[in-house]
Image (tube, rainbow, N blue to C red):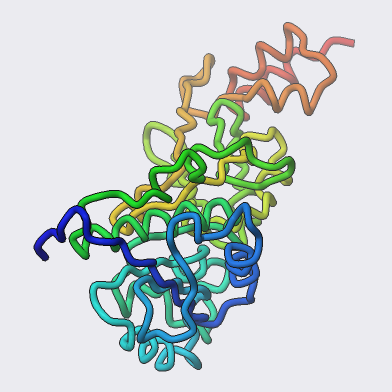
Length: 303
């Protein structure tokens, strides 16, 4: 599309929400962006529309259920081009905690093109605002507007906003040096976001943020706190980065100092949990494989 004249007025960007079978958690947070001044999308020249025929940006919540699929696709088709599609929350992006349900046919990008993803369960209003701001910029580019709107140029955009509120659960962080390979995090993850792969070099950890519900169960049950919750709320991203938004780490194998067989290293955090203090004997045993450790322990007993 040809660029429009620089002095051409920039019209408001109209938003239309489609519920694809959500629990309404994301919808409640979206309501905040229309009713609370500090999160109001009007700061970017956006406003909500009640009709898909009048919309420019489509906000989709929910994992896309069998029951509403046809209605969602019909409403989406009524939005004129060029339009920008935003998947709000992990449900439309990956299915979230509902990904294996018989009633779900998503994720949404199986049926229609997605431009922006805003992960979370639900996303914080700031994250929603940042994602909508990116979508508004993308829509204006597609329409040929060459000048940024005054709202996007203001210092109040969410990318540079204040420190996150206390208690906000955001992106997870993994500390490979503290991991003992128990895989409890993989077991308790409701969204199936965590995976371990064992290779010749070690245990490879992957956490896919686009499926993480930010529930914090992995951190809660981790005996050595190798996983921790941060307050990093800003994770909105382009669709092309959907599978790149991951947290990864490798717990490298080490050889047994006696027989040479490989084993996972004993994390210092585990010793602090298991013992009040370490000793020379404990330090010696932690470099041995279970079999050699048993032999050394039995052979070293003196009464």
